[in-house]
Structure formats: structure tokens, C-alpha cells
Length: 332
Image 1: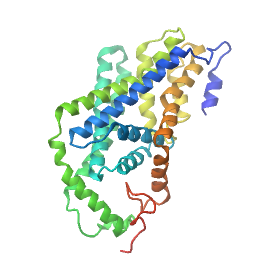
Image 2 (image 1 turned 120 degrees about the vertical axis):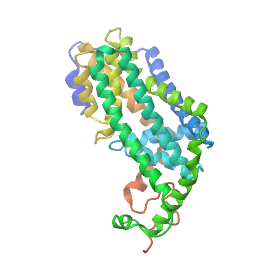
Image 3 (image 1 turned 30 degrees about the vertical axis):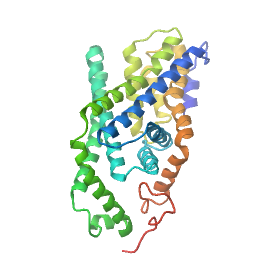
């Protein structure tokens, strides 16, 4: 699908695919800064609730999640991969759940702040900003609903046999006991949110905002490096919508769909000779490069998490390696 869109968009006399080394260095710098801010976000948010997570663990967590998200529909593999990376680093289950939820929560807040900020700066793009806010609202609803369910489950008495609903979906008593243990740990850790260090949480939020902004630098760098001009608002708002809208696409990372949307949205904004080349390099530095870096950093762990959740979902326990005791279903 990508090849089809690119071939159809490459006119006679189109822009050359080659880029100056200086442009590649700028794009790699933007990717590096974006990754650094995400690492700092996880590190600061973990320390805010009293958990020590090294920058190395944080880096493997986000990059392993990026790799798994890139090869699974609707980014469904991201959280299992991040969970497994952290669990293999020795972090308790409850702390991992809190850190991952905080990461999603801070992402939600930062996206809302950025969309509102863009709406103030680019008032002429109010329709586009409203669409972004709707997307952020849907994302926020999912994050808050997940947090509410986890909170209610942690507050209930984490003991006894599996509820009838759990039995209906085929979860065994052995797996349910492990879920109960995780719930007890989560319940004991919820108090850490009330006493979270506000300064560190604010630092994590700032890093979250900066990482999103760094990811939006790719297309402006590309367009201006070719010596062309285009409205900066379009070069920032549309990639933001495409990057975060791809999370709900059934294809991994919105493959094909993102390319069609890019052409439809920016085909009339970018000079015609620049559409295909910009699309190629934008996807390279906003998507494909994260597959390569993620595979190098934590690819094996991410694939192990995906195999675990895909091959035997009824007996898969987050944070437990295949073959460990307790992975087999136990009689009721």
C-alpha cells in the first residue's frame, strides 16, 4: 500500500530522494531528543512514587514497547512488552502497573495541553484543533476507564475463588490466584499516588510535552531542508493527527492507511514534487527507525511478550516467562 501511494504521488521532475547529511543529523537528533524525554518521563514519574527505575530500564521499556506497537494492530502489543521488560528488571507488579498508567495519564494530559496551545497560536486552524481535541478526548476516556477499572478491582477483597464472570471467560483458579496477588500489591501501592512528589511529577509532565513536540519536528525539517515553504501549522497539526490516529487503525502502525491519509491531507499543502519524498522520509523517521532501535534494544523481550499473549491467552500471566511454574492451567 505504501509503494502504491508513493508511486502514484511521484510526478515527473519530483524531488530527489537523497537528503543532505546535515538534514539526516537534524532528523536523528530530533529522534534522539524525543526518546530521551520519554526516558526521563518514566524515570521521573517512577521516582515520584518512590520507585527506582534506572534510565537503562526506562529506555528498554519504551523502545521495546515501540517495537511491539509497530508490529501489532492498534498498538496492542505495546503494554505487554513494556510490562515484561520492567518485570524482568525486577520491579514489583504493582509498581509496574502504576508506572505504566502514569505514563499513559501524562501522555493524555500533554496531548490536551499541546492541542489547546496550538489552538491559541493558530486560531485560523480551529477546525483542525477541534478534531485533535476530540481524538484526545477519546484517548482520555480509554485511559481513565482503564484506571477506574484497575482502582475498583484493587479496592475489592483480593481473595477467594474466581468470580463467575472470570470463570465464564475460562481463567483458571491458578491464574486467578496470581491476579489476586497482583491486586493486593496494587492496593498496597495506591497510597503512593497520594504522596507522589509534585516536583518530579511536574518534571515528568514537562518531559511528556517536550517528547510530543520533538516528534512533530520531522516534517517541518524535511520540507524546509528541500528549500520549499508550506504553512507550519499544517506541517505540525496533520502529522500529530496521523501519528496518534494510527493507534486505532487495525493495521500495525496504520500501515497503508497513514500513507493514504498523508496524501489526502497534505497533497494540496506540500508542493506536488515534494509529496512522495516527504512521505518516505517522514515515515522513516517517525515509524521505521523506531522498529530498528526497538529491535536492537529490546526486540527479543518484546517478541517473547507477544508470543506469550498470542499463543495461550488464558494462561498468560504478565511478567511470567514461558515455562515458569504456574503457567499451565490448574483444575478448578
